[in-house]
Image (cartoon, rainbow over all chains, first blue to last red; front, side):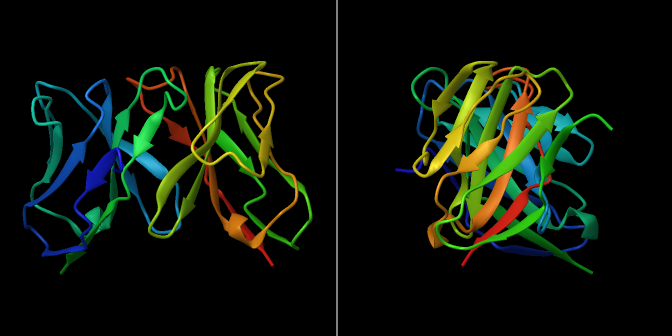
Length: 112
Length: 114
């Protein structure tokens, strides 16, 4: 089982829509979680960290549910510039991996 | 600009050739890593380093070598290129192994092995 799994998408939404991405992780020891954004043919860039208390950055809200091992990202009032692939990321501590584990990504396309 | 610098940006190799992908960061990060990204596979960890002189294998290390002689540099060597190594390679660095600051990525190297 892949350690971080995401909705495969693609999500095609009109401008101004609210869209939510979901992600589950299998390693209950994971401590840190992130959402990354990756534009076509570019490197991944950190969008936001995810905390148990939830956190918000402008139109973006991230939530973490440790009991269900579930992470979400909510984008309100979608813009054309939000079109990208969104990567859900969890950490492992210890072991041979001991790194960030990336989901395969969910593609978002915002249409006029 | 501070960040992670990867060279070259593009490379075409013939099967059996060797080459080194360069990665340098100027943020004094202890942690550096190499990922490859293939369609439908996501980012997969090749090798990583938690400091100068210390390296370890990731998920897909076969066919690749690394060394970390300085904090700034973390080159990735392909020993004998194979078509299966055609991919986009990303180098990343961070203050810590697994958060809480996330990783900063270089712009990538697109490698084609023919």
